[in-house]
Length: 299
Length: 329
Image (cartoon, chains in turn brown, cyan):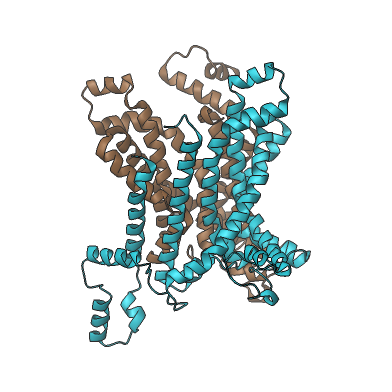
């Protein structure tokens, strides 16, 4: 049965459109799988997601339960990664921190990708004045270093997770608009778009049904590579006291709260630091592998 | 629209964004000045003096005209004009970012070139992991760990700041970049002290952009090495080193200039956090300290200046590209 389905998936002569699509996907997967580093990234991310979702089951105790008699304890069987400056279990806090970080990343991507896709594909498809106006706006937002603009936004709003998400989203969408526009420009004058237009499809329909699906590949690759930047920016905001606020177990916030203890109890600020590094590296490895498969131009 | 023509529009947008951020903030600037308990007529008078009772576009006009006179307002924290503060803190950031980009180029470019020359080899994979790690590690974690290892445990690096207390104010300020000022003053003790203090933050910051530089160099080189003129060069019997550096590298060097300029600009961003960790008295530290004190004039001024430098660097890289590559018209 497995051999049969493998043959079906590697068929040289696909019988239908769906079949051809599956063959293409399977080939991509095989190519992706041969990239060990990318697989390491993928497995790490899946693990992170599972652990975050199952945090209440895995965490040995409540991440905000304080035990002041037992503060800054080194790793032991009772506290796998030790305890922090208020005697809270670091292992539990790092796991719950994954929820915050991944949640922020998902929220930001859900905000950013549609905005970028919409702005880019509309600008690219309509051209002319709309294109120039939209791209000018994009350039203005691209002109700021991301963290600096996010800091200014958060300062204006109010430090916290919601502000951090909005601020990072506001600074993260321009590259997607650029990307979607570039992709749109390459397909805009193709025959099949002309054919769709001849059948009387409206610009909205053409953009939604025929252009955006084509932009998706490069946007997905970009999103994956961007994840690490988003994680680092979110952690940086937390570290500077402008992101998630204590006592929330956000990794950057945890480091800021415990950085004074780095001399004696170095593991307390280092452990959340390692968590940020691992999460960010995993997304970079995955994105790198995906780019090799999905975007052969960059290989 | 050419890149140069678009700069004024981008700068205008930059000003508009910083202005609007300043206007949506939850802290009422009038209350911040007169205090919670001021009588209503005082509040109203200060509001009129600051022009805050006028329509938003008039306020924006006032903001622009003040800016044209070099007035970004006064910092509540330092009680000095924000422009004076920025002029004071910016050179230190420039010093740090320049040192970092030099290190990043010296290490990153050769790594990228050799990784491309041996594509798929073990060396290539190691370089890939090193550079991906550089792009994944939070600067503040790396900075803290470096301080812990090199300063506290090994004692081979100096601590935070731009110099030791003993050297404070020893060198007359010329450029604001302590290493250069010390060399100009012929004060070599200060010079070595300043250089030693610069080394750690510069290395941490350099690792951050080295990853990017290495990966872009590798990608450009692989593309260049697949050109037909490389096959010709090989067929002519040229040495591999000559093909690699003169033919392949020479052809992609122009594209690399753009990447380097962008990497330099992005160091400004890395500097914000690095300076906070190493107490480096630059514009990044100024920005974060102002943020924590809700000193909005200082925050917006610093944001605006960083944004402007960013725009100018982008423009320069674009111009360099046009100038150096005859194919781009």
